[in-house]
Figure 1 (cartoon, rainbow, N blue to C red):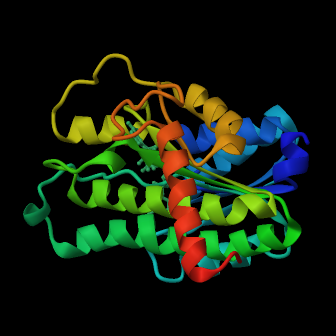
Figure 2 (figure 1 turned 180 degrees about the vertical axis):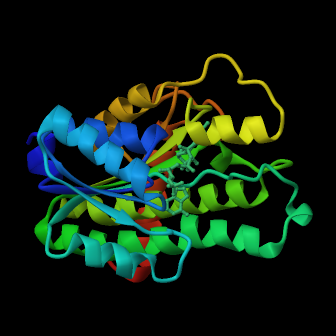
Amino acid sequence: MTPAERYGPWALIAGASEGTGRAFAREIAAQGINCVLVARRREPLLAVAAEIQEESGVECVIATVDLAASDALDRIAAAVGDREIGLFVSNAGADPNGSHFLDRDIDVWMEQVNRNIGTLLRCCHHYGRQMRERGRGGLLIIGSGGCYGGGSFMSVYSASKAFQLCLAESLWAELEPHGVDVLFFALGATDTPALHSLLDKKGLPIPPGLASPADVAAMGLARLPHGPVRNWGTDDDVAGHAPNSPDARRARIRMIDEAAKRIFGAD
Ligand SMILES: NC(=O)c1ccc[n+]([C@@H]2O[C@H](COP(=O)([O-])OP(=O)(O)OC[C@H]3O[C@@H](n4cnc5c(N)ncnc54)[C@H](OP(=O)(O)O)[C@@H]3O)[C@@H](O)[C@H]2O)c1
């Protein structure tokens, strides 16, 4: 199947107005898949929609939604209407704070939990069910090497990415028999406006060797059928920052999956 047959006719990209989100939207549109673009700011979304329509000729719908709000899925679903979403890309997920846990109000961290965990769960549940029913589709969760361990300045970010990793692994095990692809794509430092803005805010220089959003998007889409995990910059049998390589994690999930099915039954 071509990507359009597998993941079309519409993709939903959460956090699509710049950086890797914009790059994913362009990459997906280049495959002939129409796009629903979500972010908080209207003008950048309109600019990406115009760019994509000009480049690829696909249809684009924009939705200004705060993914940290409790009604985020309702607002997304209203914008989607009866369009068939064959691909959900969860891109927005960076930490704009870079602070120690106790140095920020708890509301700041709860916003990140709501966006990275609450809304992600709701979207995967809502659109995942539709994909399972159709017997095809894709869930692509943009993660971070931060999922493999915490550290100073990383508390809620790392913890939310670890949640996303385990969620993606479980969904991969459950949805693979139904023809739905699931990938957690752990990025390394990537050249996005959000990273520039964080470093700028902290008076830090831009480090060398940042990944390009276009390369990240091409890799993410190419690896989506080969989940559940990809670590940017390493092959599947190389662990990198991960405690296990993607190959080792895949084998471990199979083992846990078998054990769980012995307890809960095959379905
Ligand atoms: N950049 C890196 O070095 C790096 C490294 C490892 C992993 N990653 C991962 O890559 C993904 C993208 O990162 P990024 O650096 O591009 O920054 P990001 O802030 O995660 O993504 C930026 C995009 O998300 C939108 N967005 C952010 N918060 C939102 C919210 N509450 N509601 C709706 N839209 C929201 C932004 O538009 P608006 O501002 O208009 O809402 C923009 O379109 C993240 O999941 C991150 O964890 C990035």
